[in-house]
Image (tube, rainbow, N blue to C red; front, side):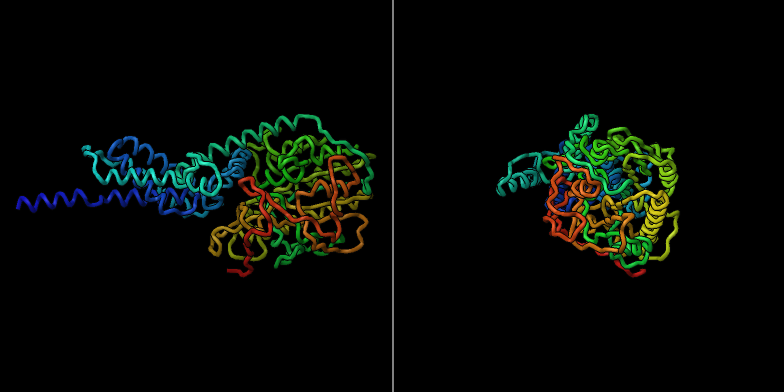
Length: 527
């Protein structure tokens, strides 16, 4: 009887504790929540780390698991929309004010927060586990240690085998990767902002060789988050842009944005770029100023600081700058783009002899779209948020129509260009909570509208030739008649001439062949 009891106790000691399964589940959830691809290897390895720490240093284990669970719970909604931390997500955090932050939190589906709370609850349970009497080292501990160490070296060894460099910081543990990605990318953002601030306050280096403007007024309207396939005039399924569909002018149906987020995309579009780095002192506004234009910048997007974002650094170079939003929490997040019409009307109320450059930066179709439309939509498609998104295109179309009328009423010759900074990707596709968010994996994230409307246009023209936002300064030079030594034009932008292959910049700051990206089709059915 005693022998049987002893054998039973030994068997129980060797059997896996229910806590082993608990730690494995928590490891899986943390991996999933931090935005990295699922890996059974690292889930098992991190479980081994937790088990080993529990036997040797339980307080350290509780602290580690508690912090990891808290971070994973908080980051889970973001990871489902934006993936693991990268340069772009960290840049967005630095460039986002409190108002925008609270708005972003409302875009995620409710069950993302439920999952986050579940992860946090598991973390609380783990932290509340009562310590046990310390046991001697055994073979199982040795196995835990071996698996933990082996997994740590897998990624560095693979990098070395594939011709890269062996670096311990490249370990594939999701928790380790998360910390490294946050620290490294955050430092890159800080360095870029410091460079931005320094260059933005430097005098431009443009060498203007000729100024031959065809028109008296040039207007640049920068849209926000508008996918080309959401606009009827540019091939979308819906008849939601009657003005753009009928107006005399030139529409480009294959224009590709430079990147998938506002700051990075416009930073690469509106500035001169050298070695993939924007030269913030040399942008299209300083070029116009150098050529003798009077410049205006009107924005419905928030302003944080004077030179802390790519957009602010450009805007502040204009002769006159006005932001509808102050950028703080008290600012009205639902300020409508049409409020910009009062500013343009004021400019047009006085005739000016200088050629004019007027820039409007819209909130356009920025998530949440229903905040832009006050919940209004014309047709229900997939979800309320998607429906509102389609209606924001109509609102922007109406604004462009009113701007066009204002320009006509001036009696001066004019030309207006409209384009969006980037597109969006569908999240929670096919569900009632379907919404759109920033991404860099699909062609539609970069497919945006681009059109030029001039006072002497006699027909509605469609150009199907591919064009890249990386060539915007070349377009601007040709459009305004401002020539500079620093701008090389390899083809006529407003033509059907074939342009070079298009490369876009992803969220990891890598140049990617646009043709190699996947597709994110806009489903047209109502449900």
